Image (cartoon, rainbow, N blue to C red; front, side):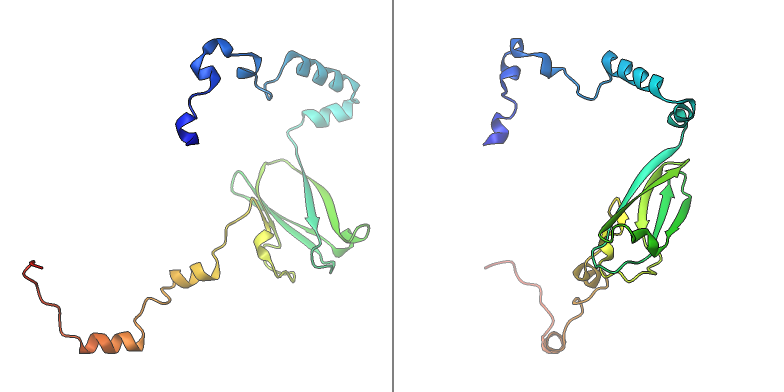
Length: 174
């Protein structure tokens, strides 16, 4: 029902109903945005300005402690160019907050994939949430189907196939 009336908006029926928001892009950079940015740059010290204009990428890594046991944090960063890097943080990283931590990581390259505990060195029951963006891992049922489980005939089906006469071509009349 809604699909039939989807293209019949007020603006589609009468083009004089167009207003400011029909062509407004909230993400478009305006002159006011440019001026605000220039004013912000003017307040920075030379070192801060150099850092802001550098090609360094800053990432905030947030990790939650779901099990309650503090462990070292091992993170693999995979970059756009196909290379990767491993960062290891000792268990002492949890000393101020044993529920969750945030760590700022600076890199020269853009990170496309984050993997927590890539070599499964830490006791982790649920490894499905160890990647960002999330990797879809097959379920047990999907793995069973991929291996061809359940496709071979069982003993009763084998016995029935052995005793059945071969099928004959019919005349086509019912």
